[in-house]
Image (cartoon, rainbow, N blue to C red; front, side):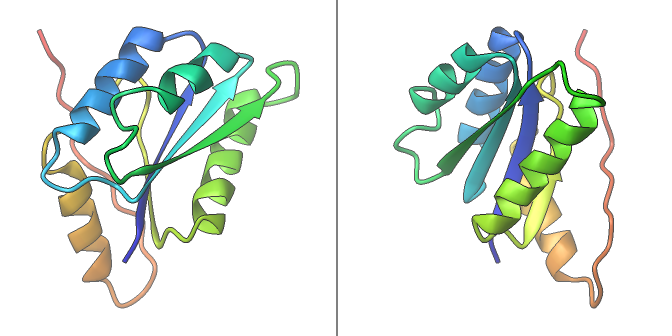
Length: 129
């Protein structure tokens, strides 16, 4: 079973870096990390040389122009399409300002694998002080 984390970013580089550090520290890393930028090529550069580089997690860049209609929805769709084309069986959408818990990828992967039919899973969000 192959898992991908998809995130969309536009200018929130510190958040992106923290998310990557969180994924790196997890007890299971995703096989694929898809970063879709909305008019932010710097985010792709920061991902290519970021914390996950060399970790065994393949990063997949994507870019979409923010002047298109519904850029967020289009960016999310591009991320999912990219993840599935890379071979992911499970796609986890993670907002760029979210730092994943160490068990996020493992819990989602295990939960999805236990399903007999495709299902949508939603986790609990906690906020830091």
